[in-house]
Length: 148
Image (cartoon, rainbow, N blue to C red; front, side):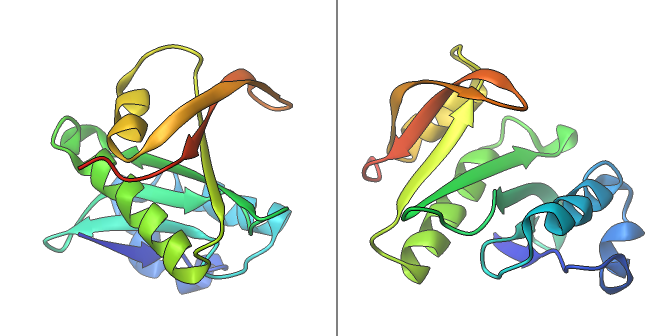
């Protein structure tokens, strides 16, 4: 599996714009770039497995105060196959390859769910409850080390 960068402008994302699997996320991602900036590698990606787009992964902006937040999702028809776990792993790998000293975080709803399992499998530990201005109370997770 690999991460395919989403470009900054709609005109440069023709393969995604014409892909029904990307319909819900492509313009939302481009709008997000306009809001926070576009600074690779701290951007959004589609996850591709055997030439098929299976999900999304992103950094929620460039690192601030030596911390970067990740987000990921698996397209409906590809769920429960370990793809979310792999996307999370690829984002952590990319972040640490770019800056080994970074603190990597992720946020979830404050309840046990598939995403919390994915984070735990990838070496994240729950650090506590945070209040997000857009999403309300969330659990914040911090990457410690990959579980073997």
